[in-house]
Amino acid sequence: MELNDVKETVGTAVPTGVLIVGAGPTGLALACDLARRDVPALVVERAPRLFPGSRGKGLQPRTMEVFDDLGVVGAVLASGGRIPVGMVWRDGERQGEHRMFDEPEPTETAPYTTPWMLPQWRTQEILLARLRELGGDVAFGTEVTGLAQDADGVTARLSTGTSVRAAYAVAADGGRSSLRRELGITMSGETVDPNPVLVADIRVPALDRDNWHMFPAADGSGPHTALCPLAGTHDFQLTAQLPAGTTPDLSPQGVRDLVAARTHLTADDVTEVRWSSDFRPRAALADRFREGRVFLAGDAAHVHS
Image 1 (cartoon, rainbow, N blue to C red):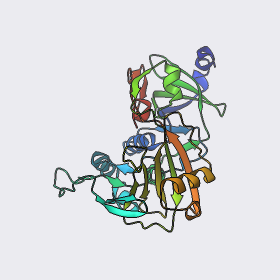
Image 2 (image 1 turned 90 degrees about the vertical axis):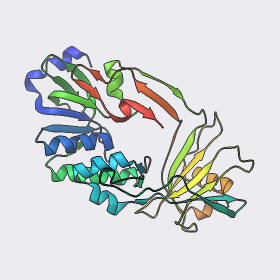
Image 3 (image 1 turned 30 degrees about the horizontal axis):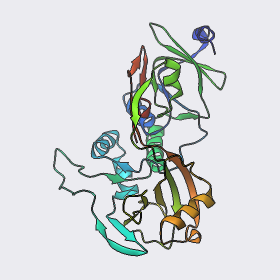
Image 4 (image 1 turned 90 degrees about the horizontal axis):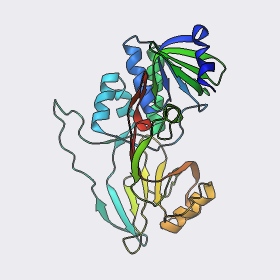
């Protein structure tokens, strides 16, 4: 859509204080913070519902402090759990535990000292519930199709056919942000590892949930595989590094076959594949975080997978 087409709708656009594009953890947290300060905001999300996978399953101490301030840390603590101790396997035998970090005692100035395990989908459910409690909500299935700004605000055309007029807009629509591209903001960075990583949420009743199970390659130098029990669920998060140039098979059978090939488990031990995706480890930073009255936030501004 041409910018002039958007500008013509300024007089008829629905007014709001801040337009937030994206209902991931960043967009929802921002919406909660604005709502509790009585700043009107509209959150639009092109997907029809919240993200379904575990993806970012570890919440860092500073994030927990922010969640405490937002009034959601109680639900986060009740829904999650501590990061489990690693268990290294080889040839179907347990080789020993692997502790990934120490657990210092909390203090008044550092009440949260270690990461907290919570699937990303649950984090988003908690934030959305808090947003609704504060009087806000998310417009799902709604995409920004055009954007224009002037000295006084931002006008956005939505896929619903309506327009929104806001004082500011925030692109919180992820690492592949379409709004960032619309603004002409580039990302500078590098691929950390050329090997793609498959990640999936699966159910494996035959495997105990006491440890984060790690399956190194036989020679110790090949692609890694791990199965981490997700606190508060019956799921494990599977992460499997694949050879460079590989196209991951994300089908349920492909995931089952991968588990059978990399661990002592059989394909039939995986009773359910609930979600699967892949990514390539990358570190990148937006060349700028603001274009006029539009700001970048979260993965739209920086990625470090």
